[in-house]
Length: 357
Image (cartoon, rainbow, N blue to C red; front, side, top):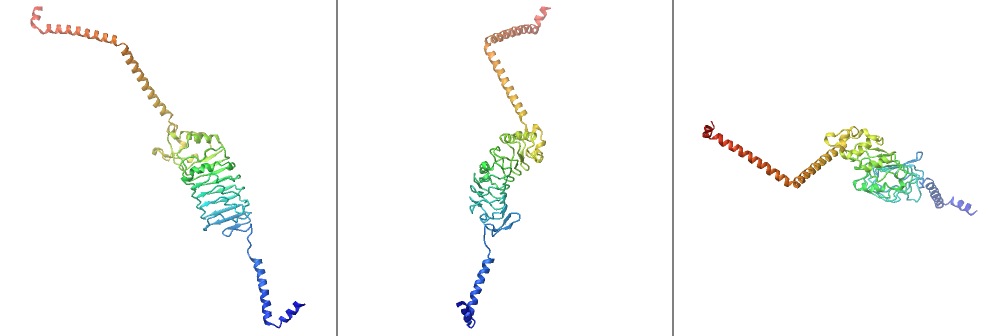
């Protein structure tokens, strides 16, 4: 009743009418703001990214961000981060909210990443493909790839600097990579396979294209023979076709583990530059014959030396008899010379000749 009377009195009071009108306008404005204001939830798209809910893809391209987006939607299955300035992948970079993500494919190429800290990929238990290509990795923790039990493919093309090559071997030896099927290491200037062993992997493809591999040592070749399921891609490497290539050459001839064997070419020596490794002759790489020839010459020299020593020993042991034999020869020669000398004197005197007549 009071409210009705208050409204009734306000009809005749201008100030009262303005106050009521202002009150209701503010009230409705607050309601509109609440209805249309963007609300951040766990399923919202990060501010600097583009999301495709239907395909489960979150794409974050370019920009000056130095960290991985921390508000990744839970429905994300594919995440692409490219063109950022992420110098370091820090520990728990993908587990900032304390929950695990369902990401299956993660691409972090072209981000200028220099270092990967331990457990950087914690919180991605379902990750199948990790692409770190075209970065500048100088430091890789030996636990960088821990907590990735389902990882199938790891791409590190054109990313690993010479400083990180030794660290890479330890990082790839992690037991957490037991389900790794494909490892790509193209364009990293590697001189050998950066894996201590292959038996802890389920590798089916090892891509070592466009590196600095001149030959594969006997240890690597033996390891490849033992892991017959692995297919190794080795084209665009500067192979040195000399005696050091013999173990690799026979592996290439007797095994089908190198699908691009026909594209392997020699870079040294100059006489074989550009020649297919697969079409080399055995004599070009197998130095066994040359070694045998050298050994034969050495053996012949030793035999001749022994014969010389034996001959000298025989001479020394029979020095007395040899001396008598030489004296006898000298006496015989002296007697013979005296006879010739006597006859010469007779033939040279004419008076002796008349007497003889």
